[in-house]
Length: 635
Image (cartoon, rainbow, N blue to C red; front, top):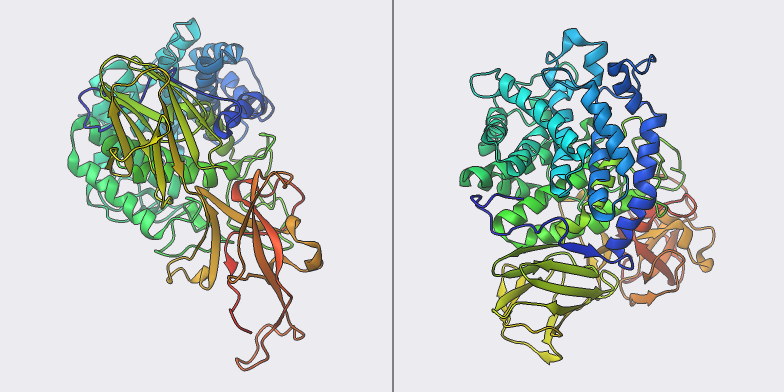
């Protein structure tokens, strides 16, 4: 939440200002998170040894260290999720209290807290910063404390967590602040955490340290490293203010960029904010998948070259999508431009949502846009189905903390009114105004907003018109409105409102066929299906009977046929697209044929359901694809 002095166009609402309804998709995800994902994460912290690692520090566990050297971060992210959920529904108070006590007991007298280094590796403390994740871990502890502070709770556990985090932050200030060691953590995250801690405490040294870390990156302090070799991996090859292109490890890049935005708005550094926007443009222009996912290389979990976006080899890590969501949110607040809310929406409904199974207890780490027939193994880097946990379990707790706080990203407010960015049924209350939102979005495009409480003074209700929508109609109390102010992708209605006033925004949502830029060689000659904010895909499980025995790789889309919209007829998809496809077949199984060889024969067109991409892999394991080869119009 930017301070009053920040250069910020929009202001977040208090954490309790928005309540999402359980019957909406977003509210339903929050309920699933509270009922399944978060308990699952807590259980795994016990069974995988994360909590025992901290108990080794306190002397309450005698076994060995378990998991990744940064395993503490899974505790902190899960704790943050529990704190958001505690504020939202009152749940998980016992886990919060027990964890707060454990962290307080494990923390060193000077504030240091990292179970990997506190027992077995004291001689290497602070000595391996390119790979140690010590400050990255501190950042996630601080983020949990920020959630505690924003919960508006004054329980002993909440105060304990804030105290523990501030002691660690104070240690960082003493050691690495102005006049201290010139050093960086190889994995950014602490930057945005420190700014957030400054926002809830008002303690300026936290902001100054975050600004110092952003300023130090790009001066070669981190490499080259024997493990990862290139400074590009760490974004340490070029100062942030001079960078023109996203590069290296995706999660590190997007976390660094989010932190740069936070520093920029709080320090009034417009050049740094411009740099963050420039980096975002470079990512969106040529390095982002249709689902919003980023990272085309499994090696180094990294961005590829411009237009290097192979669908079957997409890494598109879940944490990268979450980090991209946070980055876009910060740019939205800073600038008020709807393109950042559009990107949040794309990520949320596609790149992020696909990561979690319908039952909330299995997850993708990487998120490909195509799975080939026969690839149904459990390889952690590219599984054919979601797994219940990972050796590097960064994604599930990250998902839990995002979903628990999801309501805080849907709307903003200021003395002049309310701005709605993400559409979901629920209630928004702020500044003396209360609105009820009713919608079946993203399955339908109608959003109805009812004013239930209001002041007597005029104020502005601002609604986003998504970039994918070519036709938006607005009515107030049933009457068409042509006086709404259009600005940066938003419609603003200013008037003296009365309880009972009703606004309806109708967003046309026809199916669309999209083609990629011609330089994206991997999908040249293919198209993707979308409707509204949702990307659709074909899955082997939906192959129609007349194409029995055909594999998904043989299908092509018949662009001459209509695409139908069917609701309520699919076992897992509320809305599916009936897609005209046919299958190629060839009597010759040669891998390479002369150009003048006979054109493969094709089956007659058939209708095949396409389901939202985020729902794939919830049935039997099988092939899937987003990009579908386009059939020649004449054979």
